[in-house]
Amino acid sequence: EPPATEPRPRGGVRGSTRAAIAARHLRTDRWWLAPAGTAAGLLAFVVYSTWRAFADTHYYAAPYVSPFYSPCLAERCRPMHAGPNGDLFGSWWGISPAIIILIFPLGFRLTCYYYRKAYYRGFWASPPACAVAEPHATYTGETRFPLILQNLHRYFFYAALLVAAVLTYDTVLAFRDEHYGWGHMGLGSLVFLANIALIWAYTLSCHSCRHIVGGKLRHFSKHPVRYRAWRFVGRLNARHMQLAWASLVSVALADFYVYLLASGVFDDPRFF
Ligand code: FES
Image (tube, rainbow, N blue to C red):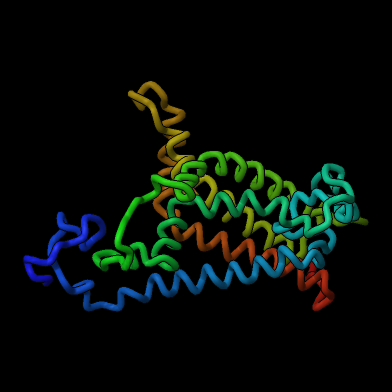
């Protein structure tokens, strides 16, 4: 405990209005495990997705298009069936077309309430865990630039709905063979199906979605449909963290599956 004569800083956990506890924390469990595991998991995804987003190759293996590259807006995507096939950006876009589209799911996840908690703890130690003092001397929350931009989350949610719709379209096309038409089913079709189910579950479990669906109502009894929708979203919302991770893994796996097919590592096992 600092001597009573020593002035204490005004802000932060060592501030004069906080309990004067010298120890950084009093926890005896392995509290660092969760933030360390979170940071490792997020870092692995960032490394993988950066490699794939900039690779600009092996993102299409008929009938599958990588979720990182859909809808593909640059001209060199034309051989692919999904999306506007390059008409929007034409040939002037020089770098990987994934960059254009990844801004939206990336913005959605970066501003997500769960991911905010995860990376504030994992990377900024702000705070590292419950009841563990953060090392920073001051705390301004999300009231200033750039963190005030976290308020854009609702708009990223609207964009994420469009992205999920595009990936749904891709999943439908994953059941069509380019030569024989509908009725195709390969292992990739199932990978895509699992991924889109998790993407929708994560997107609809969003806190903003829950507010859009059931917020600003005085009487649920007068809005039975919204009440039922809100209950449904609420149940998903309770699993938001799990869905955030499951869909992060599934989207990377779906992309990696397309990469393996497109680079000729193996052929898609077909059931029909
Ligand atoms: Fe996590 Fe909206 S709060 S996606």
